[in-house]
Amino acid sequence: MRGFLLLVLVCTVFLVSGQNNALILRDQVAVNIENGAVLIIQQSNASGIVRTGTANGVIVSEAETDRVAWVINNGTGVYSIPFGKDITTQIPVVYTVTGAGSASGTLVASTYACPTWQNLNMPSVYAPAVTTMTQDYPTTNQSAYVVDRFWVLRDYGTWATKPTSNVSLSYPDAEWTVASNTITESNLLAQYWNASQWNPGWNLAVPLLGTNDAANNRVNSITAGTNGNLYSWILVDNTHPLPVELIRFDVACSNNQQPAVSWATASETNNAGFEIERSFDGVNWEYVAFVSGSGNSNTTLFYSYTDLNAPLEALYYRLSQRDFDGAFEILGMQQVNCNNSTPDANYGLNVFSDQEHQVFISFTSPESDQVSTQVFDMRGRLVYSTRWEAIEGLNMFKIELPPLADAAYMFRLSGNSFQISKKFFLQ
Image (tube, rainbow, N blue to C red; front, side):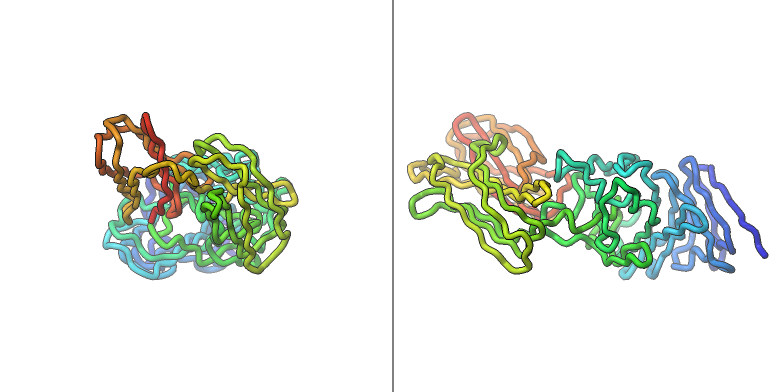
């Protein structure tokens, strides 16, 4: 009977290759990658790693910098990396390539556990660094709903054209059942970090990614659709982030020139109701009203509220949702101006983006002026800011935003004598 073998890699790079199979793990072999070592699989076919005998061999990578680099190039197939905490706790990462990338490309993968339920050892070595677990709920650490592990997939720019792929991520029971977590295993799905937030955003009413396979401790068929799925990943309980599935939120002027707020939901879970706020600047908010929700619903529901006491000037309105447990979520922000006496209130402002996330702006300035440009997401958070010189008359310019999710954003332009805003869609 074969015994247990532990192979420790502590060098910078460990390269294995052979005519047919780059790495053969026979019986209970554990390849333990430590101290920033890289295990390179120099085979582009999906049989580059093979487990034989008892087929219990594993690769232990419990740090962001302890990595497996698989030179896939333009290969296709099921590339299974047999990660494990040990021989008995196996947590493979499966990278399935359905459409080949360009001729030169390497998948670089690592996975590691978090020392506490708070997931504070966030991926930070390989850009883009993860910066928060709380962005959508600033007063609550959402790590209670996240498996206590990160998965980091990269290629470091070696694929000129990324492969079409999907990913399967596995996890140990001990990393979701810890007492401080609040997770229903059958609800686990995936989110990825896109340099500024976790996507699909908890606030966007968009389904999370993958197919739950709780019986086998994994989430399958994960795909973000672009970039070859080469991101930092988490697995999260998808029921908590989405108490309300919002399908519409609008603010318009009523026949009496008063702001009318309307919205619709496709579904509601544990929904106590909605809070409406208004603001003159999109930063400082005042309470307007609370509209009761429907608790639980799977049908489309429509809501509206007219702000009879609103001042006649440009205003921002913000819609938030509160559930019966006290959790609070901002759903969106809109601007309206019901003052008919304000001539050319928008100064011909036009804002649109292209597929490269470049944003093009044109407007007519009443004077030469130094203007401030700001971009907010639909939760009112500032995501971009700059200043530049405008000339009197028509101005046309372009800005390049940091990596952001495709979604609706609010553009605001401020000068000495004006402040104008417009919603646009990043595509």
